[in-house]
Image (cartoon, rainbow, N blue to C red; front, top):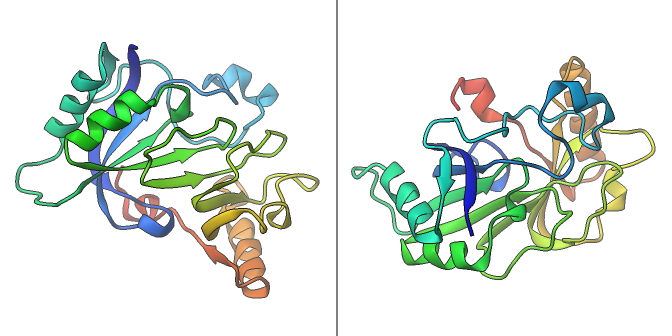
Length: 214
């Protein structure tokens, strides 16, 4: 399999339960809920995405002809002086599970990485993922109904993607993340209020944006 990758870079995880952890981010190209092009946003299932996942032209991006070459690129992105065992890679997108397979998972484990995945939940996750974050989108089916954390961007739609729809799923952590649009301040207040009234849910903020890091 050839893997299409937008970018590979080293940074801190900015969201959810792994916030603050050093990681290589592996951003796969492509998504099944939006083309990534602005002219298609209004008709997309997911209309609020803030990520460029189109093409393979980002730092470290490209086409990788094998899982081994992909794992090598990720290994080379981890700084030698950043000693960790295991090292951590976050597979994201777009939608990473359109490409991430057991062959790539095995190659990343062999290279000494713990594997985190951020998915929209519309694709069943393969075995072997160490940390699975599912972020449901309104009007998209959630077929991956278990994992490490469920992170719901909030609010999305008055009639869909309400926290109560997901509260009984099999996750260790449940996060609400304020939708970062023109109503961010109001969205944050709403998310805080919901978490206060429903302590099962925790607030997730995008600390990387607050800190001004990628």
